[in-house]
Length: 154
Image (cartoon, rainbow, N blue to C red; front, side, top):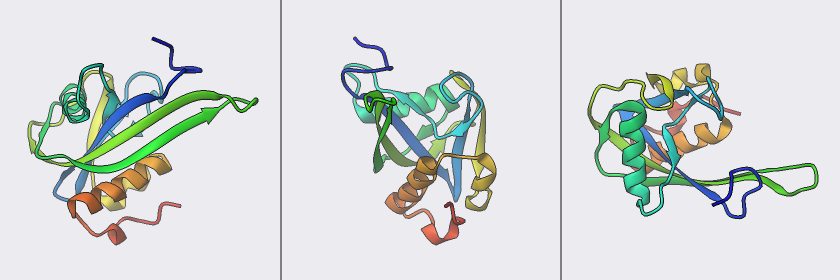
């Protein structure tokens, strides 16, 4: 198996955008990469694990919650290149959307904090543009709230 820097293949990351009413679950990263930054829950898919099982495992590990049925929200290729144009990092990220089912959200695994945020409060969490795009796609996939309710993100 190769390392994540200068990989010989993309790494698969699995995320889950969870809604409790109009609130979306956010996690603050407790370990690198992106230490201290707010994000969506997720992580690397394990060998022999389905994408849906990975999403549910990551939610249990990072936030201690369970969700109902999963819907595909968005697939993103995150590719960083070095000065010579070679792929320094390449992650294919599959984000699912789901509604909260049970469990009290709490920080676990590689997460230092969790929050349930309303659309109007998302700007204060300094999320990446890709995270904002994923939340909008997840709202559409679940018909949680009109995307127009989210503030302008760019």
